[in-house]
Image (cartoon, rainbow, N blue to C red; front, side):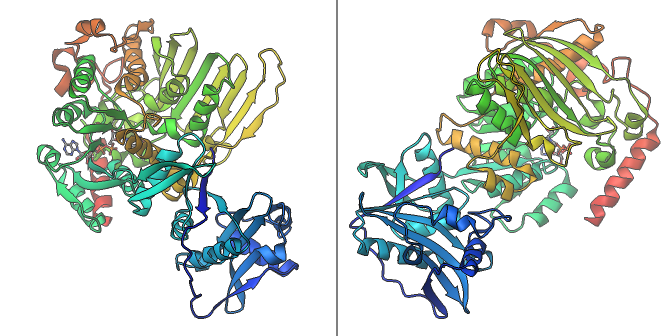
Length: 608
Ligand SMILES: NC(=O)c1ccc[n+]([C@@H]2O[C@H](COP(=O)([O-])OP(=O)(O)OC[C@H]3O[C@@H](n4cnc5c(N)ncnc54)[C@H](O)[C@@H]3O)[C@@H](O)[C@H]2O)c1
């Protein structure tokens, strides 16, 4: 992904700033001490922690036309170099280059950037520069602000620059800017991206979404809703610092005024809440799962189509560093024709089960069949390849002692073998009751394989990506390569914590709501491509594992057949079509199990 580029054009007013008291400006001297100080100023942004002083020679002393002693400056405080900038004049092009602008970490946030930029601009203008250029990144928010203050403006030179800049302007609170082409001619006026107002329902997992709404600054969290008083009260305390209104009633919450609602309520009850929001003209961001019956699937598809509003499926595993990069590589043709893939989401939830289910025997997590919670394992494979599932056979690992201790009336692991529209096969395996965790994706194509690392390799290994693909089909070189998975948002997403995937979900949703057609989002049809294989896998399990065809509700003629199909494991929704959470009949669980979980949950809540 290209960096952001900025130009300063001749004629732009130059401020005459005086350095704050105690600060002085000095030129670089050719010595090891200055190289060490330069590295310290550039750390935590421009260079890695392991950067050696000699990198100065590669990075600055090697640039055409440079004279380091004239072109590299230090800002000093108390006799120490605490900031640096390089201002190099290229006489042939009458061009100024602003390069390696860094402030030592302990001096950041003091507004010192504007002084060193001012020094560079004055120097280059005096040398006769017709224009000056620099490159930067989204996550250097403070630096970009200081470049704008110094008179630098955005340059249009690569795909997506307009949207990236509009988004930056929203972050920085800048209303309007001129943008120029690389030849310095006027391109367009830029206006800051619209702030997207978001409400969140459900404050369990919803707490993560609340954090991401608040860290993606173009999004504004305006309202929170939860019908469970103790958790709502806790949310009021935890999020008291924002301008947020709290509700215990979903209908009242929907009247608050918002662009989109995040549904982080019970996983099996998203559809009725989604339909209500769509009917009110509110866009929907749904946590997993999208629906729990075919009846709901038909109703939701029709509600989205009728409303003209957007539905986003927040399948965050599609946005992990490895899966996100696999998608771009696949779209570039690196893998060739997709042939086989595996997705794993194995999560031993026993240690958290009291907290997750509140000791409620009828909590959705205790009633759901093992195959239903399938979109973390299937979703990335569907999203990467863009292929539709057509057929599935399902399997279920037998109920075990762990599930009994948890009080979950289902097998611990569900497995789906899925045929895609091009004949390729997927294996998806997932569960809340395995003994160990694993998040892992592997894709085979006509040119090779790409896969993330296994979780056991090291903590967070699923962010790593190994690509072993030939340039031409048939080369058979077998040369695995660890590939970089970072892009222009990685640093910002990392700062927001949690591996960054949720940050990307929210970022792309906001971009899509602002009209960016290149935003990477998952619509309802694709969400059903990720979920229906799991639901039909269970129907397959119930019939001894025979293959089941997966409906495609994009086609209106397919909908009639399913309109009244309420088969599911939730008694309140299934009516007379209730099926057990475990294919061999709901296991018997003693009451004491739930009493234990309830007590543990309430004790933990009281201590928080
Ligand atoms: N993508 C992920 O990584 C991830 C991780 C965890 C959970 N989830 C999903 O997030 C969602 C929530 O999970 P959870 O573990 O927090 O579930 P949960 O059952 O613990 O909590 C749901 C919350 O929603 C509230 N709620 C339910 N119905 C409501 C209504 N009508 N009005 C107001 N509040 C209501 C409940 O009181 C509860 O606090 C689920 O869909 C789950 O699948 C996703």
